[in-house]
Image (cartoon, rainbow over all chains, first blue to last red; front, top):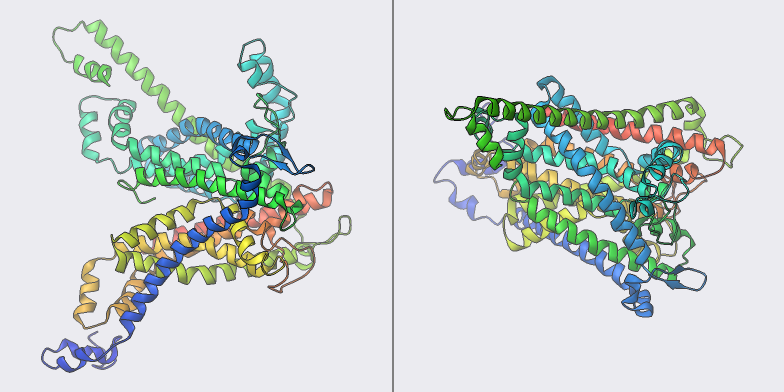
Amino acid sequence: MPGRGDHEGIFGPVQQAVVPGVTSGSAAKFRPGDPIFAALARASGVFVLLLLGSLIMSLFIGGIPAFRKFGLGFLVSTTWNPVKEVFGAGVSIYGTVMTAVLSMILAVPLAFGIAFYLTELAPAWLKRPVGTAVELLAAVPSIIYGMWGFFVIVPLMSQYVEPTLIDLFDGIPILEDMFAGPPFGTGIFTAALILTVMVVPFIAATMRDVFETVPPVFKESAYGLGCTTWEVMRSIVTPYTRVSVIGGIMLGFGRALGETMAVTFVIGNSSHISASLFSAGNTIASIVALEFPESPSGSLKLSALLALGFILFVISFIVLAISRTLLRPKLKV
Amino acid sequence: MNTTLSAVGGVPGPAKDIRVSRALGKRRHRINTMVKALCVLATALGMVLLGSILLTLIWRGASGLSLSVFTTVTKPPGSGGGLLNAIVGTLIQTVIGTAVGTPIGLMVGTYLAEYGHNSALANAVRFVSDVLLSAPSILIGLFVYQLAVEPFGGFSGAAGCMALAILVIPIVVRTTEDMLRLITPSLREAAIGLGAPKWKVIVLICYRAAMDGIVTGVLLAVARIAGETAPLLFTSLGNLNWSVSLDQPMASLPVTIYQYAGSAFDDWVQLAWVGALLITFGVLAINIVARLVLRRGK
């Protein structure tokens, strides 16, 4: 404040309060600014609570007609027949969980590798560009992944990958059934691959941040004992960060569960469950996106879609809650 | 872990067979080299994927880039047409969504960092905001459909803005709270010592000190909502005609891309690639700017 006129400070007349003795009068004056601002801040906080509350309620209330008609059987029924107005969530729940779990199996090792590279292996000059590239990969809109998957990955899958895998596992029990059927290129397996590409950057970025919380002293002591980089990673860094790493994985899992556009492009959209991973299927998000335009307001079908939305919300809520509980102590994610 | 430690401890031991030690050491180094190679491979794969996406966009999209994309609205297949209404629609909805969501998010972040701290309410708000941050965006679309489309009898640009605003809030909350918490207490104490009321300390001192971080958060939010498709499918729906009216269905780039990419017409697919190119590079550019803003502050 020095250099300015006595009464021109950013706090205006309040400045007089600096001088002891003169202040008693102005301090007692009623200032409405503080209580108003505090109330506004608190109201915004409550607003967010209400927002999530009404989100859950609106999905649930919208789904009531479907829940009432089909009961608990809605959760497991694998029938989805808009003509006969019989709806079940079984196929979509299976597709949602299957694609998300498959993508996690593929994404976790990849993300671990990238995070390991970024924290321990990358030369200093590469750390930032590679780290930024990974974060940019996470920022690409999901519809772009959908287009890229549909026009680039699907042809690759149908021409090369799927025929090869089908030949490879031919004659081996179980695997033979998992990798069977005509290689259309679309289907659960391709959807899981696209999801993998989408969640790897998320998990890798979280893992990298978590790995960097390990106190250097721990790592240095291990190196001092003659440990190799991998041994430090396995015996020091991983145990130290295990809980948060799982939290990061759950965060990626939550994203994979609710991903809509990318999956819609490549999953093939079929309401049948098949043992083969190459067969078309659907997920909750994809069936909602695809069937919504043909669901007039007030119809039982729309109610079934809202009920599906409610189920998806419950699943992702649980996953996100676990992820947050695990991550909180180490990181704010 | 045990094998590792005994192997490490085994080397200097006098009684150990030197050949065993050497073999162990070789094995350890072989594993180390292998894992390192795999990690480099994983990172290279990530970079190849990013490259593949960007190159595909440029390769397929750049050939369709022309002035008419920006000057004509979407038209029936075979009759040319551009993306003007989609671009304008995305701009309108992104701007309004950000303008509505940012103040709310800012106030919530302020509440968490300056008032709530670790109270039960603040923890609940923090948790709920985190859930909103990662909740599937399609559910936000369904919610706004129930809230603002069905009761008012039609899809509208306003509903689209609302859905996007809901997506903005948690992003701004997170960055605002984090940035406000980074401010040193002495800065606040100095202002309070001058007799400033708390709200002036927050607005004039803390916001100013945290400005770079808050701007970064808003930019990241813009980048996120500009590319969102799922919440707009059920709210602003998309519109193949020129319309800037908020009570009518409104076009947007992502929804137009979605409609065109799945169509059977070559010129529509081509336009979808052009739109994809525009939206991706726009979003990535905003992301890079956001990072630069944050780095400038450090």
